[in-house]
Length: 318
Figure 1 (tube, one colour):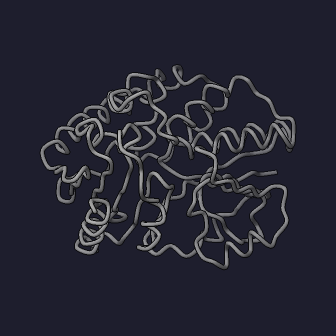
Figure 2 (tube, helix red, strand yellow; figure 1 turned 90 degrees about the horizontal axis):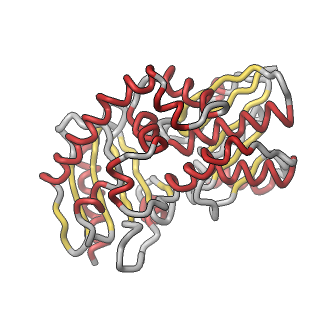
């Protein structure tokens, strides 16, 4: 038997979800099953998940949007924006399934999987507790302060940087498999992972300096545009590290695959959150959580992305 796990790619919670789900499946459902992994990314105008990706005898999606495919056996997600269409949501709501679980009250999909597996199947694996806890901290932005999130001193946060920044799918799959059997400090100390981490950390520091130069904070909303700076990603907590007085951040960035608008709430803000950021992003065909959201556009839609980001920034400033 082959289990194929489709997961949110370049995301600590996505990879941790894949690891915890696999551990549960191999222990409680089908010991000895072959496993394979497929990373999923949000795409501009995404309407469906390609059917050919479901190539296992059993297929699961974790920490990513729902698919009505008859080949999908397991699904776990916690995002407010969990469905690609109203039809997909209707399909989920009308199909009674004990193996397709949706609960947006969870901060992380990893914790949702762990709690569900424990409650329904009695799955307990204490060696995964640290991974589950860190996934909940990272995806729920439950850091003590912005400095902790940005300076990346904890092994889990260093591993997070590798996961979010690397484009080597082999490394990402290695991390998923290692998460099932090794503690986080051992994984980041692995020579292959360490070699990946060092240049990424140096780029992280340079990007932080760049954001400090180009960002503008107005009416407690930080706005910055990284298009044209050869930057493919950044720590979403840097704006709050640089501008602790801000409440929200809005940014534009372009990669080979997409132009992305990101919107976030400062979890350490002294002022209350008055907007649901997922709902705002959904108006522009994006989504996310109440405290963080994003919109994906085509790589050539930079001006539309800028107009969208500036419109959102004005709304948040008002």
